[in-house]
Image (cartoon, rainbow, N blue to C red; front, side, top):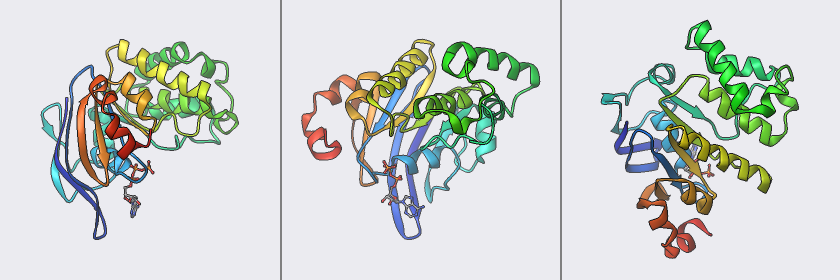
Length: 233
Ligand code: ATP
């Protein structure tokens, strides 16, 4: 579904991402792990049209989308749950969700609102609450639900467990398991390497802007050298 080849993205003269290639097949959960500053967010931003790569190619469902705008990518079926959630704190849960479905018709959006209320009971109970009053775990669920409102073919998440209490980290990974069981295609950036490798079909390890390993979650979990050197446990 997604093919990234030879992607390099720079901030000024500094290459934050160098010659990165990855693929995500339909129905796969793919993890992207690596330490702080490895270039994970840069890679997601480059795929989602938020950053312009200086070289390389992004293909989505066979179409070259390297230079496509974030809006065009959203319309073609890519949705991103950004780092730090970036929900609209002055708007209610429902209003946040409606924004997530902005590219769709009223009827489709209503249908998806019902789905989100079922998938996220916590949000259903706070439908009319301003998002700024949600707890960290609730806010993360809202950010994920908002992305799902566009009915994406590919859901990308940037550090969904960041800053959450352990029990809420469990909740996020349970949700990833549930979405995977529904057959959704997901690319997840995580610093929580162990949990990500347990949840992913395959994963890539990024360090200092370059991929240093790739494999199934099980294979990479056995590579203790990677954990010690690149991820830090
Ligand atoms: P984190 O887990 O801390 O979010 P990351 O793996 O997502 O890290 P990136 O945020 O992609 O890493 O950053 C990769 C590199 O690019 C880092 O060295 C970072 O300092 C640098 N960088 C990121 N954003 C910018 C920017 N807007 N301007 C300049 N340098 C940046």
